[in-house]
Image (tube, rainbow, N blue to C red):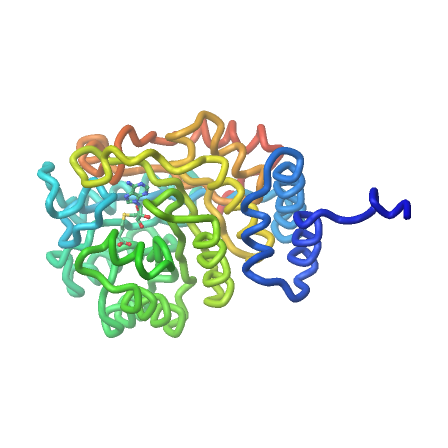
Length: 339
Ligand code: SAH
């Protein structure tokens, strides 16, 4: 009697459970990811509130340098997969160090060094690079060079690398196997576990919109990030890359991507969550929406112009400039951290 109006919907019940960190299940996470209309607005507002509570108004900038596009792997979605006939490059240590200087000069305190899986960059060469950067620039280093041995990860940590980014891409075994013909989900999980054990600030993430992926798979991804205690979680939409087996597959939904960012914020409260370049590539103001739904990092590209066009992990990739990022941060009512 009269309780009809006060009864919570499934969405509200799930939101309250997750917000309060009370016992919740994968069904609750799935329900939030399926929110539409007013419910999705409520989800974004709840995530923004947690962001505010944990990080005040701060947004962190990172500078990424894509220092090699050689890759031994053949991921079906990726434009730099080994089977793709593109012009390959490797930057020299001097070129990389010069780009790191630019990052530091822009008041950015972290460089992300990313490459394909390129064995030419042996442990010796990587260590030389790390030392050169640490001695000449003095900046926090995030490595994103793919799967390596535990011993190698230990060497880089010892040489002073603080963070590592290795996205799981998807925790669904079958989708993972289809997307990565020569790889194994359990090995990638092992790598992430090593990185955690070695004391890295540990980064993961997933791609939204892979073939056959459902909201429930994304819910499982987010629960896995929680269980692994991930410090950084990059959630970005799939974007078709030319001359890959998925070139005709439709791009991932930006709406679902933003909802996944919001849910990740509710569940992994203290994580660094980038408003990804991929999101902005698919939708103008995509990054703004992500910031308003709980994201707190923007990555700027410092790969020199001559190489940038050959690091097309997906097609029509946008290059986010500092001015644009600052404008987006301001529009979200947030402030940039100078570190
Ligand atoms: N070799 C490194 C870096 C890979 S490229 C590694 O294995 O970690 C960096 C990220 O780009 C990948 O983790 C993947 O999530 C993303 N990516 C690659 N192709 C993509 C595509 N077509 N659409 C969206 N994201 C893509």
